[in-house]
Length: 523
Image: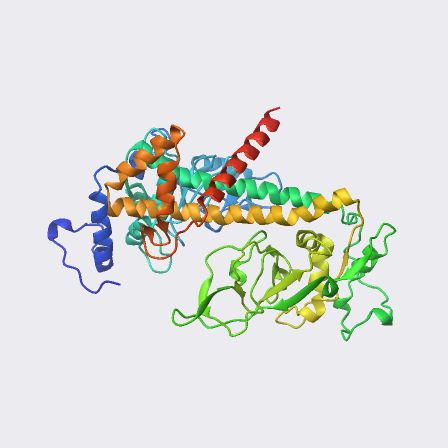
């Protein structure tokens, strides 16, 4: 926090006489924005017919599958919205708050909690509403590119501006009047489009990766014996002594698993310990000095691929716990035991990452089965029951020695199908790579905004690059991307992209696949 700041009387705002509002970094940031040249506000950028509104004050949640969804700030993505698992609100209340009905292309901005966090409603946005801590903004596309505005808000420049307007202590947030007055630097339409297009490209890569992942799982599911007729509520069973381990708790021997494996169409079974090497990670202290490595924790796990930035820690002497491509990663300890086995994250990085102690690594012998098949099986309902059965203790831990005993059905198939079966691993790696590149593209969009504010003459470069792209020439775009590091254009450190051709190839694959899907949907 800035300790001192001298403010002229003429620069004081009657609505804000607190010293924090006039902190040097906030004042300097505001000066950079206003000094850009063309500047607008969210209020002036919106469609004239759609006022900026916040959502429902006190949601009346209901248990009805056809009721509207309630989008929370926690569901905001980069930049989409995750609709899975959201609660639903009463239809009558939803209609009463018509001004906050969200639609595809709407910009959602957090007013409380994580003020300044933002999202853009995707094409498949269902009937939904927002809460009182979120503002809905419908931008006029003739005035601003919504993806550029999102990038501006989520950049360091935008974040500082939102921080400045936060008031309150118990429930800190930004009010609707201040949201309307948030200033946005407005370069030319082509420069905005150039920056916004990076986010749109990221969205296409994520959509394609999601489609590939679903197709792979569908392919594997055909080889997993059916589970629909099982009684998952059966509590009692007899266990033969030869099948018992040192575990004498009934929880370790779920009855439904026995029923499943006794089905007539059951395939040959193999204990996971003979199919894979199962072990835990190793937690290391954070540091920026000496020999370091990147560590991932449970916060980096997801239902798909590794997410978020790893932390930098002291490198261990031994490298035997680092990840390799195709590893499956799973949370092995949680206060809420339901988290264990809920997500099986597929590791696509060739660079070794060090999982923490709370992350279990399942390294499948891919000569026996594809890692993606094992993942699909363990992600099934019966697979989750098996993983949950390994949990020990009140604090809920799952240990490799117990996970090793889980039996996995291995299908028998023709050589032709087997070739396709094994090819799924590499395809899933490609999908994970697309997601990784998508994260870099959204990061670049924010960095481009920050660079533009620091050096307004870059607007000419962005304008020229976009004009060239529209003319079929990607050379200027490639040149800019090659200059990008985690610090910005020509910043310190390694380039964000070590293979621009790979990025362009995946963007083209994603575009073709999504275009084909749209064509089939229209047919």
